[in-house]
Length: 499
Image (cartoon, rainbow, N blue to C red; front, top):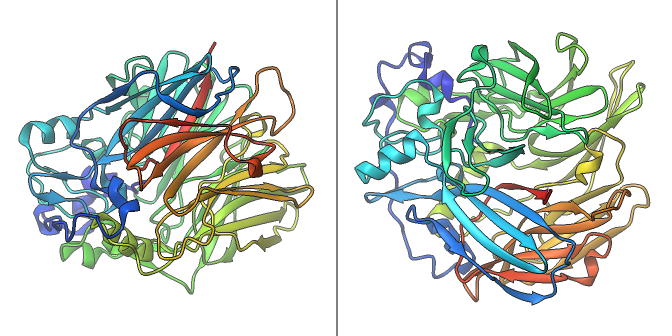
């Protein structure tokens, strides 16, 4: 979840008027407490760079025997080195987990992605490079954004190649069995070093759509199920946009929401981090960029009131209207302050306040209609079989009467056709992460499957995977799969069924 590092690293120093990276550094802040007063925040302490593994995991309840495959999950996990500590959740080095399911049993494995940054800093025993939300004195040369690549946001599996994704640079290729790092992925010679976002959209036939942003430009990718680049294009985007994390795909279009976030260069020069130099322009509009899938040069920009968006659910169109859903979040500068507190083991004073939104675009007139709901949610997911198709069901982690405690403690299922809502609450000792929809083998109807995701029990100080019948969410989990330890909070994961 890091923006356009290339602007700062490859050629951006001169463009920003900075003589050197030394002009933009500050030490990471030390811990103010031991996380004891907010036990749900313990995973923000991070891990020390170690691998994790556990076999024959303890199962509470019963795992469906048809649940066979691997759930890969990625997220930031190393938060401190040599007395320095990151000030932003997005900065931590990436840890990829593999939860393997089959015959009613499960195992767990986790390894840090061996990026160039991770290996150099491990050898040095301290941070050597600035991060998105923490301005650290640079102590080694680097070329391009991949020098700062933390590979910490999501995953993509294509055949025998697993990719750890980070939107500021290239994907890192991993071995899907051992999770060992093979190296940076270059999709095509002319795309070497181009950012490849952490939210590729994969249609039912395996076609992959993705984007990357850098220094006021956007790259679009269409990739076959076998990993071949079918098309790509680079073009300018509105200069007012400094952060684009996700997008959505319908039958005929790619849609992006470009929030009014500006980069304050003077603040950056004065020593702030990139995150600390972002400025929210509430009086400006959020741009809706609509791109034709058949021809990337066919683009139009619509406008809606200023809003911050990290994640989308899905989209569909019938040639006349285009409909999609997303989660409207708090503005990035406010979230940056929240994350500073979280990284110190302190609960943010403000609430998360992110909620579902629905958009309908009249493709002829460009008229945009917006609808909103008031549930507190994030990380929307849909059945992978309906990506870029008309859909009915959306699933989210949600917060239900959490009080002062941080994080989501439940799950929410919205039926967009009937209006029915199902919820389940784990209670305030549990923090709930993203859950994905896993289709049941042999089923063909949307929503026939299981919800699978990770949780953290702050009382037991252990992490677990939960498995629900996606059509009976309010009945509670079919199974909880317990680790003998805890893992850091991750961002995004994908389930891949056994062949």
